[in-house]
Length: 196
Image 1 (cartoon, rainbow, N blue to C red):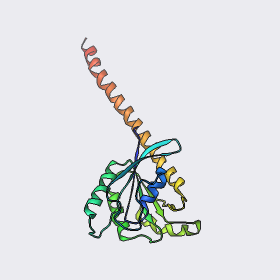
Image 2: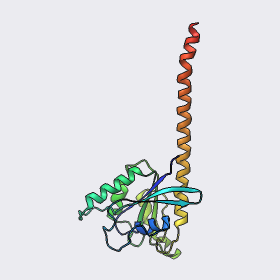
Image 3: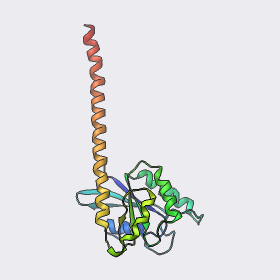
Image 4: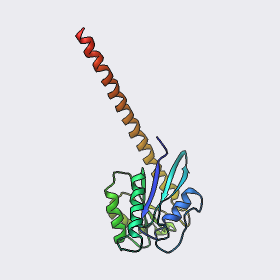
């Protein structure tokens, strides 16, 4: 399998660039408390355990028609198309918003694995803030804190589990193609031998 790609998708100001920087181990993306700073896709290599992969940071998707929103959304949609695994990042302090629900609707359309992360859970006493996010329909939310680095390892473990599944599916596809090629080459030979 070629290096897998992971895209971080979410609404504005949930900490996508902070998480991106934390995962790649560098301050490549600009981090501001102002919406719309990240507009294009930003790429970098990342590693976790025995896995090497590409990360994509994206701008925030929102319902409101803010300046550049169409272009930001288009860039995020391209990142979704390119990704093998998607991290859907939300903000636990705000709860589930209409913009989170809009992002969820967009992600329902993909057949790619989606790992739901709830950012800004800065200590374990705040873990109760993740429960509302089950309503988004992406399974167990991962409580994380980009600013403190909490939960990032658990999140990456889950992302990498999806790499294993993708590798297994790729192997199965190769075996099926190999078997069909073998049979397609053997059948004419058998027909020819049968005529003899």
